[in-house]
Length: 148
Image (cartoon, rainbow, N blue to C red; front, side):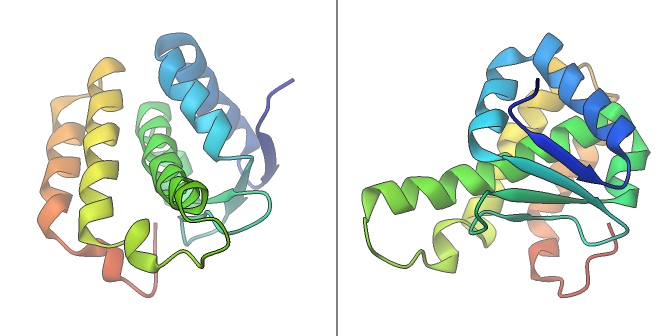
């Protein structure tokens, strides 16, 4: 039994990506299973709902369907957002978590670094790694409509 509940669209892809993490990079899988409790496949609009109870990663079709390695890297990326959110909560009991604690440029840089690390460990093609590196300056996190 997985500690992560998989719901919605694309369960097969989600289970495949999680299995990749579990077997190839177990330390990342452990982190993911701490900070993501539900992965919900949706048509579009990938993103982390760290504030949800339980913390939920929304995985859009484009994210899920690109490749298992890509999807695994995206899961790790969003688990780091959730980790940042929950670390703030632990360090500031009773306080509201400000967006800057887990989103925005600084947080994205942290998430991107972990995503790159997991992609390299999963032997992702170099173009995937380069794409993620290029996202550092794109400002994609400001997008109101997420097509991925």
